[in-house]
Length: 417
Image (cartoon, rainbow, N blue to C red; front, side):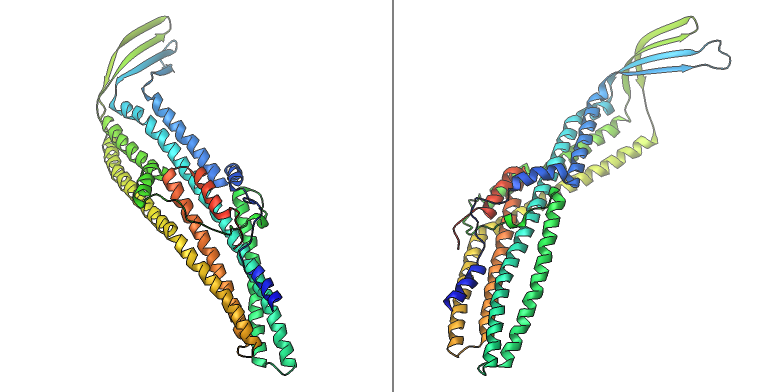
């Protein structure tokens, strides 16, 4: 019995690792930045937004125009070169002021996608860990069920068991085999999801869960909320969108105001050349500009509400993550106690079975309980790590350090349980 229980505990324990971590998520994150199509599209979008920022910087530079024409009654063509330097234009001034907000918006939007990539990569990694750990736990359960079923058959053949116990165990064994096939497909699916981000298939054996998960040093909730509202790139992007909407209102209003420009005009027709300089005052009035100003005002209201929505969303996410991480240690402690109690239950039921007090089905039910509470422990640890990454990435504003710390928590080598 001791040998059988030793084999069972060897299977129904969290896997042990011999190195600090077998998989390097930081290296895979670098690969993902070179491969992931969603991130690559965000990189191209940042380039486009930076081009728009540069375009805004050029709005107050001189403008040159060359025109040539020949009318029916002209002996030769007429050529006109005009160089205009804006001196006063509220519309162009508003465009010029958009340079920095557009550049900041481009960078903040790009960092938002970088944070999203880190979270998607980590989510794919935890998906592999969940599938691999559950597959290994189910394999141990399958071995135990096979041994118990064979024992029930032998006892029934010797007239010491019941056909009911034998059939019940055969049902549970068939269910475990079906679960094994399902978990195998889940491992394959998780590996493919990871490969879709990184660009190459991972070695699932390298995704080894840590043995111990100690308390994390956390700041207060108010500090995390304050840092997240200040540093999260999504909040920064929404603030820059609001600023650009304000400047767009100023630009459309400036389109209704007069402009003053210095002009140089060189006009030639045949042998005659006329050069003139002066000031050009333009008083525009178009109904389309009036409608455009009203539209810009509504877009500003929309940008304000979008910014408020983003801040509230980040605040809720941070509060949820902080609550889960802060309470996670006690939850994991309680779950560890449940695992220990379930193991003692298996030993007690096994001895009672040998003494004729319990049936083999009771032993199998106790084994099922060990499998379930251990699987729940893995799920809780994975959820804890994902919340920790969300908390760090939101407060720091950059995903690299957050990903490194979350990896260290989830995959760090420790002594076996």
